[in-house]
Amino acid sequence: MKKAFVPLLIVATLMFAYAPVMIAQAPFESTMFLLQKIMYFHVPSWFAMFAAVAISAIGGIWYIFTNDKRGDQLAVAGAEVAVMFGAMGLTTGPLWAYKAWGVAWQWDAKLTIALLLELTFIAYLLLRKYGGPGSDKLSAGVALFGLANVPFVYYAVQLWRTIHPLNTVVPSLPPGMREPFWFCVFGFLLLMTLLVAMRARLERLRTTLDDLYLADDES
Amino acid sequence: MVRRMLAWLFVTAASVTAVFAQPPQEPAREQYVPIDQLPPSEQMPSAPLVVAAYSVVWLVAMFYAWTIWRRIGKVEDDMLALARKQKDAGR
Image (cartoon, rainbow over all chains, first blue to last red; front, top):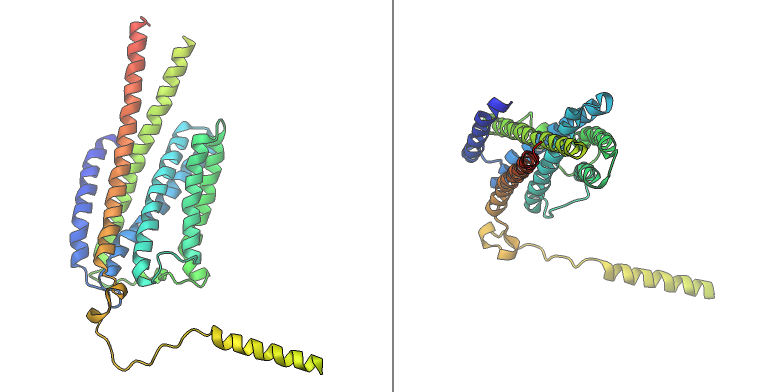
């Protein structure tokens, strides 16, 4: 990952620079026109959040069962990145809804569960910061709860009566809209991977520093 | 008798309340109004919302990457300071 990081960062930057061009060239949707173009960044930000949540939970399981610090580092990195992408989704969505629905926020099942998912990972980070000894394993459990919440966020539109657009919108995207959408999804997932790698490196360095301080105190 | 009077009063009061509680009816439309002739309070352009959404994504991602970069730099500085301290102490 170390060698590939800079080339991948360049690719991600280029993708994000080119994405608006592709989106601008995509056809307008018949009822929402320009407003629908928020979807090209809104949906991928949730996909990236779900992936980061999965990484955090996998890291948590790894840490719980093996006590391997690398699992914990991955879990923390995934959780923080998940909060960031969740914040993007929770900001871009209301900007779209403000015009499409006439209100920025509705206590609709999908939106409420998505907010709960975001709050779960904010709780994770608060637990890590202020939880004291043992909070690493407790927070790994929180990450697992967060992962269990993901299918409810995704399938909420099918499980409950909501005003949010259906999941079928994505697989039924017509040519012209499909390409920029998947381009953005790939760009967001790449950005998520790079951010998780960076954040995990920070956690690794912190662990090393803690070990050095301990060794220094003992000698 | 008194019971009947009370029931009549209750029904009348409830009916009057229900009538006054109705939302005012909009007058029937006599003609269609083109969208560009709507008062500014009823027009909501999409462009600022789209630009705001894209800006938020860019700014949040860049700010977050910058915070990680800064934190890594701080930890590396602490490691260097510790190494220097150990060297000065002759360890």
